[in-house]
Image (cartoon, rainbow, N blue to C red; front, side, top):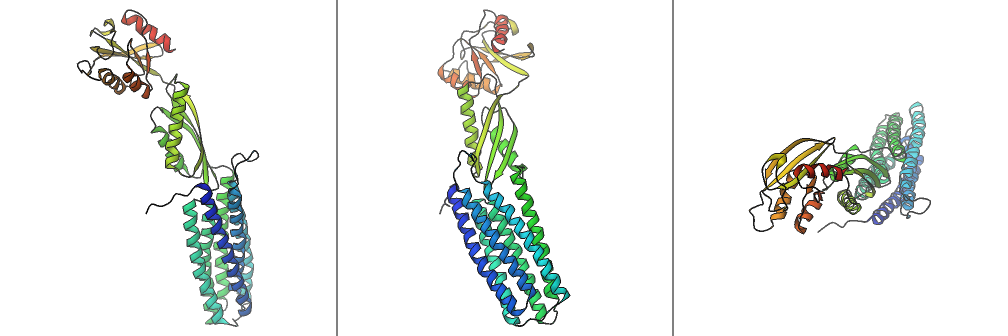
Length: 408
């Protein structure tokens, strides 16, 4: 069965729903661990309860961020509200670091002044349930986060994964306290706090970089550049910029095309580039394409001729029927090289002009001078962005001189 592709609003809605479920489960988990932590006197369980309680605010921040991201762009926010989700990631980071510091205080107290558990079996059971629930929540949020490509939800999933390790440490601490190692609870809590603070700082750093429009994925920049260069008519690509905004990215780039390109053809190339890139990069929200004429040092010209006498060859009034083509390169206004090439299409009965045009395309000609061009050859040449001009002059020398003037 083919997997259904979600549009951007369906993706945000799915992420919002996942964040809401996470908030409700974390609330129930924190209450359970807090109540039984107090009843059993387990400092590690109480610390884990504080950690889960902080998750409520973290998941709530993700929910609010995804909710705001669904608002359509307006006059005040023309780029949309997608960065509300990134801002929520920064809030998550702050909550995580703060809760980690709180656990440090509680854990140090547990090491200095350890207390035996009052209801150890219940405390061990609650710690085990916490491990299982944290693991399942982490997998769920990671699955949805990847599906909708939500950095806030993926960040929250990482936090839940840390909760798994934290809960395992708490479980070991509670079990150790039960068998007589009372200070093990405080040690477990201290290790948990270090993991939490490290994760919070990492998520916060990424959120700040996104808010500052930093390029976090150089590989994506290279991918966009390669896709643009694959479009026929694009001579070069530069100044590719990519910035993240919630689950989406915005990009802009400059395209180099052949000189003197028509507005219609430039617009057509721009549309092809945008379509090609968006087909490959689904999270791309907008792409700004700017067209610039490529600066070529050398221009290659072609003229149909009837004789093979170099620069004194006789110009031909026909294109497809011409016996030869005089091809020459011009750099800085001077002829640097020329050659006489036999027309491979001269003896063909059908589509002679098209075959001749295709031959000159392979020769990398930029400008073709000919008195008569059919619709077929014109189409082939225009698709390859080759200029075709009517030659001015009676001799080959005059036509070559006037051709340069016409292209200046």
